[in-house]
Image (cartoon, rainbow, N blue to C red):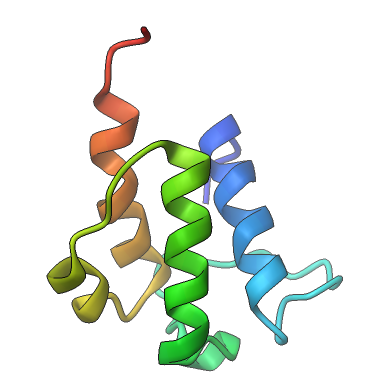
Length: 86
């Protein structure tokens, strides 16, 4: 993943919710499965709440339910990236 402020924020959120990433130097890749990172459905709900706050967006339940990879999470936050600054 390319380093941007959004990238750094998403990586920090993933680290805080993933026992596999935690404090390691591993960098999540877009193709990484959330389950392989140790993010189960309950942890995904917690991660989504943190993403909503960090990126100032509302995550649709259907989008969240279909999120299986880091790339899926990136697609969910794309609308926040296109928002004009207020």
